[in-house]
Length: 222
Length: 338
Image (cartoon, rainbow over all chains, first blue to last red; front, top):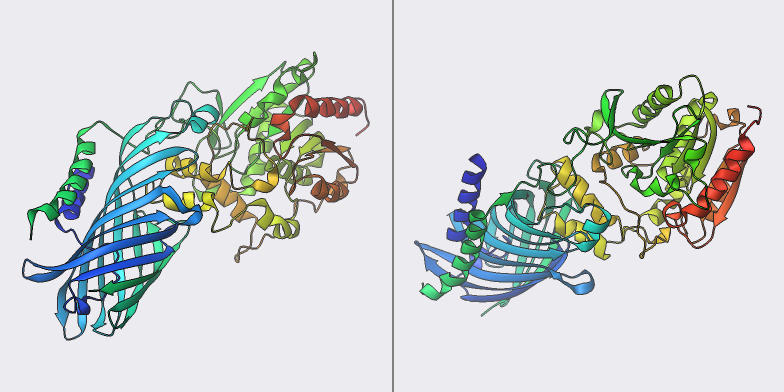
């Protein structure tokens, strides 16, 4: 019952608080132009290349950047390993240049490897606190990415050489990842360069491989 | 805000909710992702020993001399050694010996444990309990594959009088200095490789927070992570279930606080004068002929045979050839003074 409640809350957060996934772009520049396109590359958690679009809209009395992003694992350009996010991001509280920024994303991702093919639905909630000025920003971030439901289809290889009775189907509450680190960026005209780096832990705070994330992004506002 | 902007969001949400409406599975439940262990399935052949429960099978007449098989890993299981129990050219080891196949502590279908009891010393204690149980007062023969060859050497180093003979098939480095030299070749940890990215990407789907998920995900590196082993792609070694915790903590037990391998399983091998047989696969690059030519010198009396047409999985791919060498070796030991 507790698990179902957690999942329901996570789904509601994901559905209602749609915004940009990576707390990576400068909220102090939301007023400079409404639209943004961007690309990112990094270790997150595999080598991932992403492209995204965001648009700043007034909603519930705040400026929100709503957007969508798609990414694939860049190693061997493996399009079987992909991720799509619908996301929203806004400054929740601010005092002068100090902002508490909240973001949430609803995520679907897929993978195919030696032992299984999977599609997953999840949600990410991240908070960042720091200094956001029109020309630059620097913040610390902490977030949680929950794998809510995952559909697994086991490979012929796995069934033949390891476990013929492996169960295909929807698996509930398959995992979650904490991510915490720093993010920062500078603006050059309409362009913005941003970086993120930090550590990854499982939802039970166990080690992960790799134990860290890092990404570099370039965006343009228009 | 225009309503159409919410359509993709609703689709994502409905997809997730639709999944919740279906019958869902628990990734940690026994039998879903990985087979149950002996503590989860009472029908599996098992023994209780040394504070744990072990998956184990025996073949042959219990009155015959005992051969104990030590599988690889650490963290693999005995399934890939079972062809050595079969009959080839009219001969089976069961004709003359009592064969004991077992999954080491925390691996295969044996009981899972946490870090505190996953140590090399505990492994040696487990093996000694097994030896005393099946061959009390009489030395046993050991056949060790890869890590199993290292494990056999570690046991011989401590209890030379309890081992009547040993066959070491592609044993890994018997001391930490050699492991340090070869570790980057043993595991191809290229950050750009597909298997490394598969492991990292897979962590978003399944967190390694319990034994079932840890063991399941460890498999991602099994097929592609060791290209220097020359493994067969047409006749791959099977496995029951890997033991991720055992793999990690037994390896770490051989390292110092900085992660440098500092174990040495050879400090007392001069006390073991019985001939030892090393077996290598001709296609095995990292743990093959060149390494074993060095390692035979660590025993007072050891020889090496190389089996053509197989890699590190030589015991699975060329079992008849390996068995022929084992038989010749064991025959030579019969009646030999100890």
